[in-house]
Amino acid sequence: MGRPPINQRAMSGAERTRLYRQRRQAAQRDGPVTKPKAAAAEPRRATEPTEVAALKAEVARLKAEIEAPRAAPGIDLTLPKSAQAKLDVARRRLEGEFEWRVEQRAQETSAERLDQMGLPHWRKRVHEADEVLKVRKSILPLKLFHALLHAVHPDRHDPKHEEHYRLMRWATEELLKRKLVLVGEKEMPTERRATDMPRTVAEWEARRARATAERKRKYAASRARKAADPAKC
Image 1: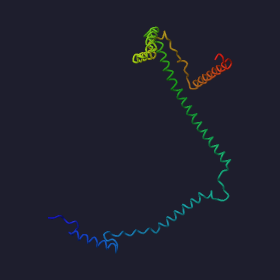
Image 2 (image 1 turned 120 degrees about the vertical axis):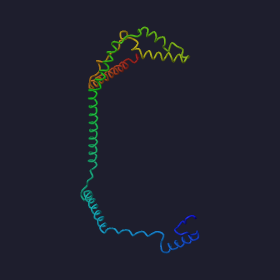
Image 3 (image 1 turned 90 degrees about the horizontal axis):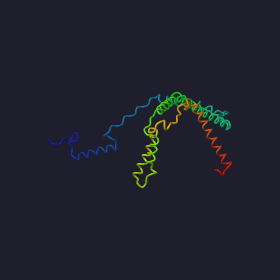
Image 4 (image 1 turned 90 degrees about the vertical axis):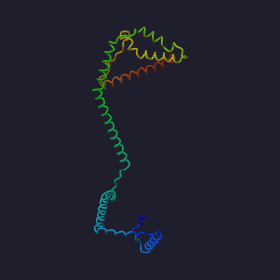
């Protein structure tokens, strides 16, 4: 059995070409016959144009009501330049006051948190460290520590030997870092400021203001001495 035909009826190539030409000529004369004609569009509802017109009229009426005060004769809603300037100044003043109040509230809240949690915690930590320093024992006598520091100091070695010079500099830095650990409290007392720490943010700010005023006073006194006797400067 041979290959089945392409269409319902077996045709040669010439027959298919002739049939195609006939359909094409008929389509050019009477319209396409291979495809069904499109169905006629369903007519719109008779009420649709009326509803659209009603909605458009309602929209137009609402727009007219909104624009009526602006378009009404004898009514000018624009402010004079002086009044507009005053309004802008008042608005900027209110915005500035609002920002200032927000900033003040944030500072007050942070100060309360610092008074309640931050400063007591650090006072406790400093007090504990002070108690540990009071009982620290000596690993090296202070004289021996100074002798070791003097021996390994890089100034006593030739920088031409780079590796040895770097080693001595590293040793010097490490000795200075561990000075409090190596030397006892009796030979080298540690300065303690645990009791001098402020207890509140207000006390902190007061001490800060006093320190700033003291620095300014010393600077002014120094300037006055230099102006009075430039030769000694």
